Image (cartoon, rainbow, N blue to C red):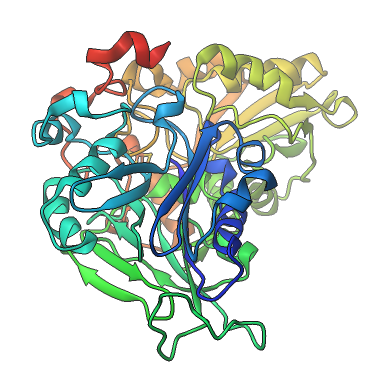
Length: 490
Ligand code: SF4
C-alpha cells in the first residue's frame, strides 16, 4: 500500500504542478511513511526529488524551485518489495534508449522473478530492489514508439497489483491492473477564470486549455487540492493526461474487478469514496452489523482511535450502549501497523495510545478496532485498559479474521505472523487477554457495503486469490535483494 498522485496543470506557475502534487500526496500520508518523492516534467526534461522520511520533511518548500514543469507525479512508500533504503524510494526514474520515464506504484507484483528474466542485463542493471524499479526498466527499454505503446506491450506480461502514475516528457499516465486491486481515480481541476496564462507552453491547446487533471489513489486527495472527482480509472485501463487536452482512455485488458476490501475496512481515509460508498459511512454500518452479529452486555463502547471510531459509532447506535472516547491518541506517532519492524510496532503502541482513566475505570468496555494482524497491538491495548481500571474488556473487530497472507500490496506476506492463521478465536482471546472477542463476518461486511462479493478481493479472509500467486511469491519481500543483500540492506 502506497500513496500515488499525478497532475497536469497547463499554463500555471512553473512550480504549481509540483506544489499541487505534494499537497495531494500529503493527503495520502497514511498510505506510506517510509519515503516520499516528486517527479516533474517541463515538456523537455524530467526532474526528480525523493528521500526517506515523511512527506513534510522530504518535500519542503526548499525543494520546489527546482521542480518546474506542468506535469508532476508523487509517491509515498510503504514497502512490500525491497528494504527501506533511499534507492527504493519512489518515483523511480529511468533514462532508457527509447524514453525517460518516472513511475509511482501502489501495489505489489506477483511475478517479479519471471519479469526479471525478461530484463536485458538482468538484476545487475537495477539500482534498486523493488518490483517498481524492474517494471520501470522494462518500460524504458521497450522498443515502442511511445510510453503508451510500451505499456501495451509490457503490461500483458505483468501480474499482480498495480495502480501506477507514470510521467514521461509530455504526459502523465494512470494505469490500473485488470483486477483493480488498488484504487485509482481521475479528477479534474476546474478552469480558472482570469488567472490562466494564454501561453500554455509547448502544448497544443484545444478546448480544454486551462483545465488541469489529477490522478489519485483516494478521492480525499482530490478534495484537498480542489479537484472534482470525474470517475474511477477502470481495472485494465490506461488514462493519458496531456496539458490542454481531454483525458484519453486506452484499454489494455478486460476488467475482472477485485478491489481490496481492506481499503474500505481500514486502509483508506474515511472521507474517501470507493465503489460509490463513503468510507466513514461504510465503516459505521460495519459497526452496526458487528453489534448485530456479536452483541455483548457492557457499559460503554470505545474505539481504538482513530481508525476504529466509525465502526464503534455504529456499534454504539445498534447496541444502544453509550459511545465514549476511552483512549487518547498521539496524532504525531505513525500508524502502528505500518511500521516495518516488530520492535518499532511494539514501542509504537505505548507511544501512541494512552487510556482515559476517568472514562474506562470500573467499566465493562466494548473496544472496537478494525483488524487484528499479529495480535500484539491488541494485547497491549487490553493491558493498558486493564491497568487503567477497566472491569471487563470485550474486543470487537469490524473485519473478519485474517487467515491468509496478502501478496497484492500489504506487508502481511508471512503467514506465521498472522495470529488467526494458527490460533482459534478463543486462543486469540486468551492471547490478547480479553474477556471476549468477536469478529465481523464476510457476509456482514457485504451487508454493510450493500455490494456483491465478486466486486472485491477477500483473499486474506477466505484464501480465494483473484490472481494466482506463484509458490515462491510467499515471503519474497526481498526477492530482488538476494544478489546484493549486503549493500542494499546496510
Ligand atoms: Fe486486500 Fe486482503 Fe486482498 Fe490483500 S489479500 S488485496 S489485503 S483483501
